[in-house]
Amino acid sequence: MSDATPTLEGLLRELAPQALGAVVRRFRQFDASEDAVQEALAAAAAQWPVEGIPANPRGWLVTVASRRMTDHVRRESARRRREVDDAAHRAADARLAAPADETDPGAAGDDTLTLLFLCCHPSLSAPSQLALTLRAVGGLTTAEIARAFLVPEATMAQRISRAKATIKKAGATFELPPPTERGERLRVVLHVLYLVFNEGYTSTSGPDLQRADLADEAIRLTRAVRRLLPDDGEVAGLLALMLLTDARRAARTGPFGELVALADQDRTRWDRSAIAEGVDLVTETLQTRRLGPYQLQAAIAAVHDEAETAEDTDWLEVLALYDLLAQVGPNPMVTLNRAVARAMVLGPDAGLELLATLDDDERMADHHRLHAVRAHLLEMAGDTEAARAGYLTAARRTLSAPEQRYLEARAAALRD
Image 1: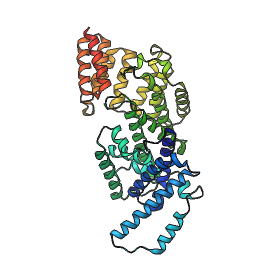
Image 2: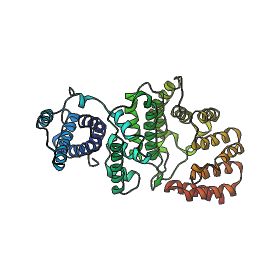
Image 3: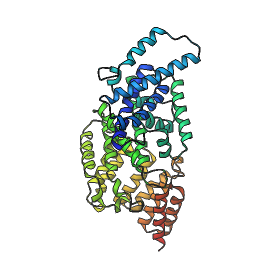
Image 4: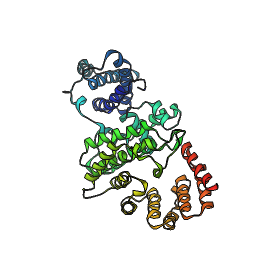
């Protein structure tokens, strides 16, 4: 699908989960249906630029994938030497003879949320949830996902194959989880989308700081969930957080791909339409009774984005929001960012004191950001020698080339 034009590629990715949902609902085999839909998407990417986009593109994909599935079922039946029920096949052939249209409930229904729940099944590891979500719901090819996470295509193919086998072994069905489980499962879905966005916004490794395609995909999928769950405050909060953060994309790197810190960014390059949409979502979602971590993170992002200059940032409000976030959704990264906010309001010593609480946290033991933030606060406190050592330690521990160069430059500036 990577050879398709941007417009066609976007259409195919939008239709991918809808087509997959229709095929899975009809055949009840997620793994084989997913392969069939990928074949249909590849066929569309090759044929539609030549023949034109059909009047009912979703019906076209469902029909082609369903025919692939019918062939698959027949081959499996033959291989296992089981007789095929002729009546059942005649009924299946009759259904497949006419292209699916909007009157076909299997083709018309939007099963994106059901697919997301399935791809984020609790039996899967977090990396498998990420890969399967991007493949089945995002419509990315295995090669595209492998490039995004800097692993060989064969490795990613095995990961996706194992994930589908795990789902099958777990007996997962293509249905929304019961209401008693839905809240927890939705939390996992949102976390997976959050991880996809973060990997796109700041790649954990490799030569580039950002992967715009992953960030865009996370925003697109979160918009889809928002359409399905318009009253959920955390869904709105996550979308707002992504928009407000991604709005700074163009200003985050210099002409040679170098990292530009938030305080040094040219704010005229920020996407004001994305900021406006994000702020509107934050304003709407903060009126809900129960605030969640994504809503609070979005509110913090809004404070930064609404400041005309770095000096105009309302750090008192940022700190108050981080204090609340530490109660609602505590984790080491919240503590890290809260330490910076404390330093900006109460001075670097206050920030360093809070940062010290992470020294025994195994989750942060090898994380470069702990050393980078400590170095920044030590620099604020005037301890340039310790700050320089901290920047160099952080540079050695990051796998991102742009971050490494940035941290080494900060260290070099303190030596001069």
